Image (cartoon, rainbow, N blue to C red; front, side, top):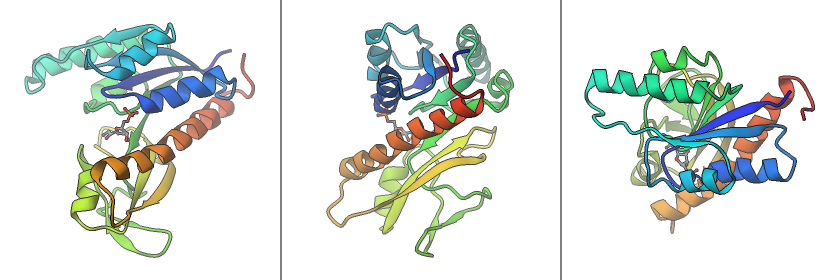
Length: 214
Ligand code: GAR
């Protein structure tokens, strides 16, 4: 049985590409069966299409209208669910998904976050060198890490729960912040770690779901 992955993206999709490359190299132990996006111009959409993967743009037209948002989540859950994924990967997906969406894929949704998160939902993180730094949540955590003058940040892959940027941690890596870092240079170094961790997490989850798969 193939371990099936749906990947949701809002941007460049370089993490999606890491999954696709690992799959093409026969190293993922899983198949990306669907790519979804809330943005038509997300380059991740092109990456899915280029690999001949079923790819859908599901627009959220009025993000602040609760009824429109609920309907959009229903559409997204339906199209993702049509591909019967074992795992749904939020790879740079910049929309919050509610408990109603998550209920369609219980314990099957994972997210990557470009900062360190604590294991206990708290407001601080203890680094490997014993430093206590703030837990950065939300959509702007790379500039936040720089603006706060932190010496270190990182990335986290975690299971998604209805609480934003929380949930059981699957993998984490620290990334030092260099004096000369810009948002772009720091984010690119974080993404190097994210791509490596994401492939490793998927390999682990796919392997744990039944060993070698064809
Ligand atoms: C990654 O850094 C990911 O952690 C972040 O978006 C980037 C996507 O990069 N996700 C979030 O900030 C989610 N709140 P990519 O489009 O090149 O894969």
